[in-house]
Amino acid sequence: MGTEDINTRYADLDLWNTAEGVKALHEGQVEAVAAVGPALPAIATAVDAAVPRLKLGGRLVYVGAGTSARIGVQDGAELFPTFSWPKNHVAFVIAGGEGALLQSVENAEDSAANGATSIADLSVGRNDVVIGLAASGNTPFTVAAITEARTRGALTIGVANNPGSKLLSASEHPILVETGPEAVAGSTRMKAGTAQKIVLNLFSTMAMVRLGKVYRGLMVHMRPTNEKLRRRAVQMVVSVTGCDEQVAIDAMEQASGDVKLAVLLASGASIDVAIAALDMHEGNLRLALTEIA
Image (cartoon, rainbow, N blue to C red; front, side):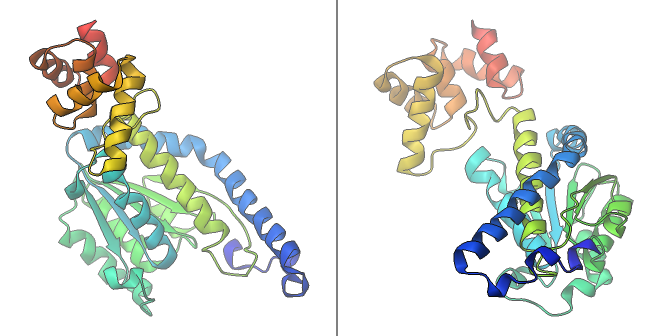
């Protein structure tokens, strides 16, 4: 596997001074970003396949072991504060359980049986979107979980860093990001991990855009749960409508913290008309604004 090979570029890493070493490690991170480029069409295809199922109430299920599991959890956990994606529409299948996020659980990734059982225990079904992450692409736990999910009719996406790997073959939507040898051989938290995080950033963000949770580059579907977010919400209403700040504050209060609804109210719609417009267009603010124009 390429991710396990020795990278001769870094053979003298321990002899270089710190500045030289950091610069060389940074080069590897830049390479990881570039490696995502060839995978962009596959990522876009996966987004377009996932959105219809998510609209039907499907869950995003992240599967992984070790570093890959932690990267998946980071992506999924941030969907609620950023996009108000329902917490019960995200699930995590982690080799070794939640405790493995903080401490390594030896041999957990080698259990194919546990991978398949974890998917069954979640009652994964046809509307769910299951994303498996593995740098090697051959982690038994993750491959078995994706295989079981696909058998159950779920949409399966596999993200791996080695071509020809089992995870890519098992997934309906394989996403290969070939990052090659690491600066420290086998330390896939480096280039491979960076590339996996970028793939998830692109996939989940674009899925939320397609679901109508972003308007003009603003996270208009987020819920203001603290003072920072309340200020951000008011500024979004001001930015979109051009109203003054007090009008935005009043609209946010009337809308009970719903930014989209507040935008329509600040644009002059009554609350009944605003709610009807959002309902008609499945929460898409751009289309709702057209409706009340």
